[in-house]
Amino acid sequence: MGFIDKIKKYKWIAKVILTTSWADKKKIISGFKNADQYYEIENTKTNMKDLLKCTLCPNMCRFECPSLRVTQKEMYAPATKARISYHMERGDIPMSDLHSAEVPYICTNCDGCQTWCPMDISAGDLLRGVRADLVAQDIYIPGVKEFEEKVVTAKTAFTESTFSSNPDFNVNMENPNVFYYTGCVMAEKKPEAVKANIEILKFAGVSFCTHTDKRQCCSGPLYTLGFDETVKKFAEQNLALFDESGVEVIIADCPACVNTIKNTYRELGYDHDYKVMTTGQYYAQLIKQGKLKLEHPVNISITYHDPCILVRKLERQPFIDTGNLDPELRYNGENELDSSRYIFSKIPGLELKDVFLHGQQTQCCGRGGVSHVHHPEISDKIGKQRVKQLKDMNADEIVSACPACEEGLNYNGVELCLDIGEVLLKAIRK
Ligand code: SF4
Ligand code: SF4
Image (cartoon, rainbow, N blue to C red):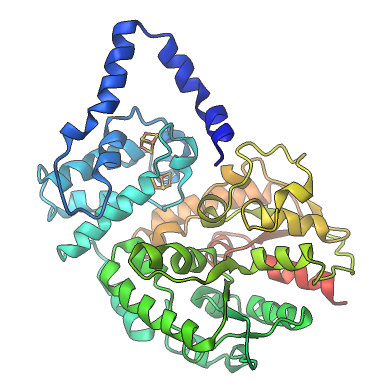
């Protein structure tokens, strides 16, 4: 978010502070300046300074938190989860108390809290760090360790046959420029979208490889659950494969894979120079450069579900989107704005019916934070709420750009959620 946007977003805080007495203003400023004295814990995987701020906050973001919304339990409001976590980190509550250890897991990592946070904090990121501290001490809530073991054995989030049963996905051209990193969820649950992506890349004349016989899970789900040491092993093996392939660009059909390869690997110490983006972002670039022509009208209406990770971790969409933004301003060629709506604006005949909560104000599909693995009831309730919002738009199709969202929405009542690649393919071939 740019400086001007930040001022616009947070100007209400300045207004509130201005209305206080000089004595209170002094107290607020000194509280911020001297906050360090209230935390003295070292070597945590969470940011204790921010966790403390979150702990002291009057829960400004609470109405945005899907876990709180569906559980209706104050214990699962972002600041309350931060408070319990803070006391666990300090040892005031034993980490081994599984009742408390469950709290940081009641979070879909949707970053909805950060959208509203006056301090630009993601309670989700803080809670993820707390989960990593639990894992570091071998403390697991039910379902978590079993999931990690499954991924380590199968090398995918599903089974060993996810890729071997789809040999067509293994496309390896000579001297490729692009590595199409096929996500486990897309391959397992939406093979038709993988086929669409392969067809689009071939149509655009892109020289690419997939190496689906060698690639391993990006391990993003394991990072979310706190298994940092396991993620490092996956990072090493995947980066070795990217290096071997000689590409400069990595594209993935899943925003979580992109976030993991682009940001998490680097955060864990595996720096690299690859340009990493989603398939949608790459297509937006090809369209902008005139390399992908969309000539066939697609005369349908769609409602688009913005994936949290895409809009809140990988792009910077308008904070309040009235829908009137010039499509050219939605994508500046640098993957920073709104690649999906840029693509939709270029498809002839396509009508986008945006749901009220869209763009940065999107709502989680319920599958974030791998919640369906450890808290399926909460995950499904969140998913059903989102499905209702999307269905109420009465569009011909519901579309997304993340296989986990598409799967979650399907599971919770959308008959068929299309991937952005599938819609795009309709515009490039008859
Ligand atoms: S994320 Fe921000 S707004 Fe939400 S409770 Fe924490 S500090 Fe407050
Ligand atoms: S990341 Fe999402 S689910 Fe987690 S605390 Fe923030 S708003 Fe709630």
